[in-house]
Length: 225
Image (cartoon, rainbow, N blue to C red; front, side, top):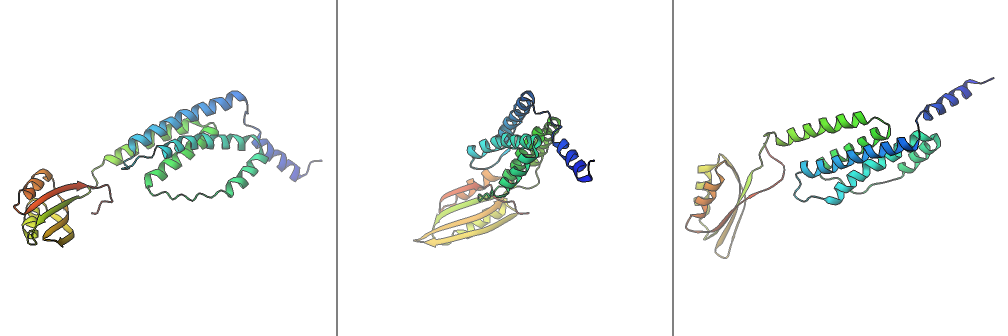
């Protein structure tokens, strides 16, 4: 006579044996995962706005999708393997800090795609790729904020700041003096500016008699509202 423990064990083990672990299904799962891995690879290359593009990180994203798929396939095939996999992965420690928030998004995207492909739910991976691409593309191009420009001015003498700031006030409603350096009879001024008439501002500053050179730089830092 079967006890409740035996019935529960049998039912539990049968739940892991329902997956059709045939070579054809494994190949299909990896082919689908490879397609989505390539999609994530090109999506990261197009959507990322980092100054320095990391090709090695992008390759790691594609590889992570395939690795996660193999892990899910292994877990579904055998309860013992699944328990051993959990124990093995629990001791893994990653020391590399993710500094870019978008990198974290793509990491989770790769892992989630590998999980759903390994589970045989390619439809979810397709919907996720479609929706997430549109969301990232639209939000990346929404004009919710504009990074300021950095005006660098080098001039002879120590009394040029007032003339430079008069030009800045003419073209900019919002500006901040970030740095001023006086040495050897020369003045170096760094001003954070916001204007839609950048070319006119730079030309008029450069036309000042005491100005040696002027540069207007952009940066990819955080936007301050």
